[in-house]
Image (cartoon, rainbow, N blue to C red):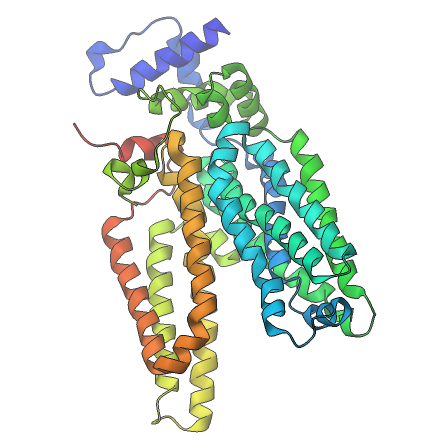
Length: 441
């Protein structure tokens, strides 16, 4: 073990001083280290890390499933539980999850840093199992709301931890592809909920089956995480170097362990404390910053996809605004409106949907990554809530032309922001990204 640490440290010294050849210490340990960095071993096999990523994205599948699970059965639920016709109660059944998700996402960083990524996934699955079971068995509105609140807590905890975990266990050359799995799993969860809800009008009490079914993938996540690797950066930050080595060996293969450890040590620049203040996310150096997307994210890069995605969304909003004008005939209005919506969905899935979930954990340093993701996802849930709450009201007051023009303007502002402020992270290790964002001396 001492020899391995000495080798990693020796390589780290050489990497930092590669521009000053006279300072490189060509000792006996340089030979195996040079071999470890040879072209033949520069790209670890993606097959080793794939099962761990797939298990992690079960949490995203559950997120999508519980987002859509009450859409079809809501009418049956309201009749069976005695609040049919009460629109406030029906709205609470749908939106209580959002309140739970806000709490879960706000706590996700502290949970992930405190107990590790694997246990955070298990803590995500547990309230989903309990909450779904309560919703499936309840005889009244109060029980349904309690179950939805618990499920929402797990929903909020899962996506930030999934983004963290996938980013930290994936080889750099496929990190973008693996990051897209999160978005794909979410879509599959939504589709699954819609299909499973189809028999609800023909079969009495089928809505209870819809909730029971969700406990199966949650239980799989809870058990399967026992066999998955813990995040090596999380282990390394806690001084558990031997466990980090074992995790790297499981994820990358034995020939890449020492290089991966050296990369971790290279970014470990004096972060001697795990104490992170929220102010660090708002000031200083930390402030700067689907299937087709899976194929393109590691080829074109994150920044290019974001630019074209927001630009395409702006165009789609312009089409919606034009469709709402009085100068377009009826059939033209229909085609423009439907075409604009399809373009929006396509361009969103191309970049704005999957890329931020990957880019955010990439650009934050390891010591602040989990808590930063918690804050980002909490903001996401708050904005989501208000958009859903106010959209119809704003549409009524402002009209579709002005409202869609406002949305399009925000998309164009996003294009300018990405162009000026977002760095490209394609093909870079997390440590290279962290060092690139360090303030220059």
